[in-house]
Image 1 (cartoon, rainbow, N blue to C red):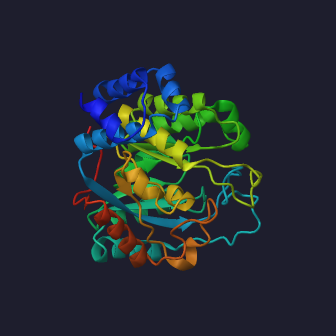
Image 2: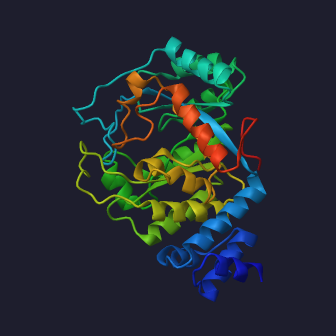
Length: 358
């Protein structure tokens, strides 16, 4: 009865079979590929789906929104991904590396002055930062009593183990798409199988497994999004980031149409329903596409925001896609805006490290 009243209050007609599938996802956290495709293809029930994901989010991870201090410490990358502004062949970007002392000072400011409980170190695949250098940085940052996430690309099992032994807690490596043909088309010289093996090795090493996908790459289909969601469940992910593809003018996909916020939100909401207790960020790409994109994500299953604490002089050059919503803010301004957003939703900022409680 509650579901029918909810459907009525949303002022939309929802076919009974579609409502039944969503209710199944809420209770069982399992859907078949065909059921996922059915929900992804039809927009009739979007608001009902988003509300269901929000209910599951509230039940399993609560109303706290966990904040992660993002430090983009190098925009140098050996790879040549066709959708990424940091790609090796982009000659129109000013490259930078932040030195170890500055990385630590940014982390220290985020933890001691801004009160953030997790630091995220993100970069292109920059071979300058060897395992020894990274472990030294990790050990130093861990003296601040903070959780630490790495997002630095494909590494060996031994390297993942070394990061974990040095104190790292989580590792984010987005699959981007589970369609092997598209993956290897848009990530030239890279192997989908190796990417998947890296995700497996992250788990073996003891690190929390983070992954995610783009939504809207040329050639992606509703079926491939369903496969992405099932893949996340298969690898027992601890955190998943989903964002719309936004074409960059200095990449081979500059003239592509790009993704939509609505489809990205649907993929994210279904991910929440099938993996009810994981961490899901409201990504910056969503906010870039629409001014209230992150707010919509937080109302559709997301429970994490990553305020950017990189110095403004660097962050303008970390352009994965154009128009990043946080580019012109100082670290303190970024956090202030995030706090206001959370307050407007009546939610609270997480007080702990925000680890995945399996």
